[in-house]
Length: 268
Image (tube, helix red, strand yellow):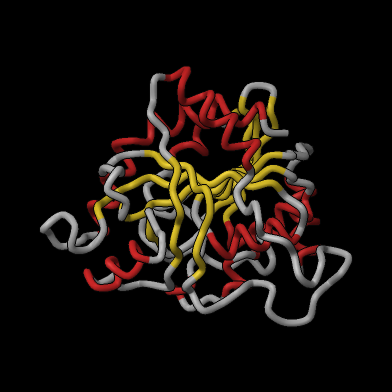
């Protein structure tokens, strides 16, 4: 199915990007920044799962950011939509087959660490997989990657240095943190957030980890950027609402756009 989907992409555009971005909830505006762009709805790509979450456009856009050829997944799928971890990683596997070697994953996340505030952008330094699934479960294709891929540096130190330098030039503080992935769709309880803080999590969300694992399996380098769209349950004294997540994503998208514009040309 990946080969069939790859053939569709090759028939739609002459561009062959080495860099790709996956956009999280409320962060889809970046796809509009590309020139010479071809937008392909997910439902036109064989085997591509459909995005059903609010705030996810559900299209693959291939174009240029200046001279840099870039592929952008405007929207992703999640386990809580009824998909498996392998299905959630389909888009990343397609990008890898298409020739992408550098991957930027963005997401909306709840802030757990006391140093994080609502609206902050945070580099993911590592993750904790609490989703109960792994996209590599099942038979392994050695032509794609090893049976037991190393995850010591799941999020590229080199890419994080590039991002830190870019943020410094923008005058933006860019902290780092550990991302905990849960299946959702319910938000976490205050007790669960206390547990996550105890085991070392600074951020919590419902995506990204299956994509990171699949990307590493294929030999891609990964940069993860979380937008802290809300403080996690029990930390702010108010109930959580997905509308707030989207509103905060819209509020910080200008800063994220500028950061991505600076970072992406340095990643191929």
